[in-house]
Length: 392
Image (cartoon, rainbow, N blue to C red; front, side, top):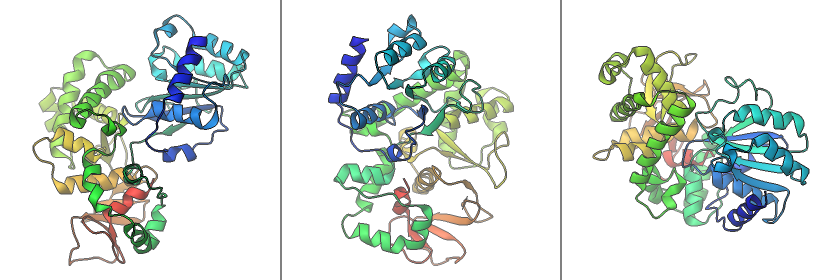
């Protein structure tokens, strides 16, 4: 146990978080069992350590970070470790990579039921299911999704600013005022291109080739998260990788399931299951008309964020595809996104129709909102695209 405390103290003392994540203020920290889900590379470990640093002294024995990737837990049951920790006065146990531990959900439930004074905050893959597929944790664990940087977080990181997030309604009602205030201090468009290319994943701060690092991370998502957690045989990995690449070349677009099934040599039903796996892994987004959802065929498939487009399409990334992907990615964290009616890209919250433009068009419909790239400030229903990056 003492060695874990020493490791905890070292990690917290040497933690230099690049920015305080927006999710930190969204979580109800009074809950006793909290799950932090997220795709690889978005900073889940840093998030757990940042919580410890904000609430406890590094040498405190009340809070402890552990990583279940540690070989120690191949022999030591998590329940016994948690029991020993709480008997020593431990109050908060931070558990990283929980899915690496067999029967993790069963043991977490045991800890929840038998150690009422112990709070557990655990991290895991975005592919994990905590509610509909996990009877041990149903009604007990509260889960949150940690996403990559928003454009707002990226700006704050790069410039040392502290711009707040805005709700969608605030942007719709006050975008001219908000954009004027921000643009009086900074030039958002000077940073938007870099954000689209490499700003979503925090590891762009590392001194490594970003695209190569992202490709490596994507392969790890498929090899470990999707195959292991979804219990798919290793032999099917090449089919899933090929499917992802084919989707990347055609997104955003309507998937031809028959063509894809022929290309990767599997059934239509299997293709649909793979699409769901890729969505759960936060590699793609599936856009549906209002009142439709999986297992129906999606109307459109998008990459989950624009960084993925640039890493996969190394020769050419179409600007309109990048714009639409940026808009979808930034807005769908907190708002329902569906396919718009004919001639309109997106329906937001079942009431707001949106198109995404590369510049101001002469043909403007007053019943539609336009997210417009390459403008600092908008007017009326023309809203700068970059401002939707301030939603979280």
